[in-house]
Length: 71
Image 1 (tube, rainbow, N blue to C red):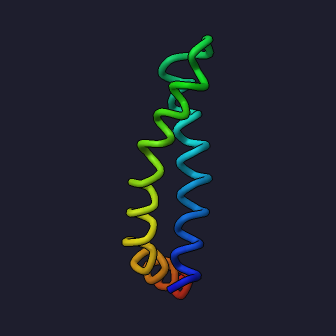
Image 2: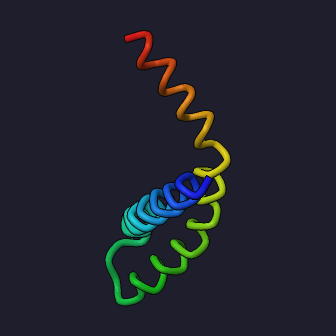
C-alpha cells in the first residue's frame, strides 16, 4: 500500500505538472502571467490526477498484464 501511494503521488505529480504546462502553453501561449496560470492549473490537476492514478492503478496493472500475455 505504501508503494502504491508513493508511486501514485510521484506519477501524478510529474504527469500533471508537465501536462498542465503543455496545455496552458498551447491554449494561452507564452506571456507574462504564464507561470502563474500554469501553477494554478497544476494545483487543480494534481489532486484529480492522484485520485485517478491511485484508484485506477490496480485496474491498469491488470489490463497491462493481460495485454503483455497476449503479445
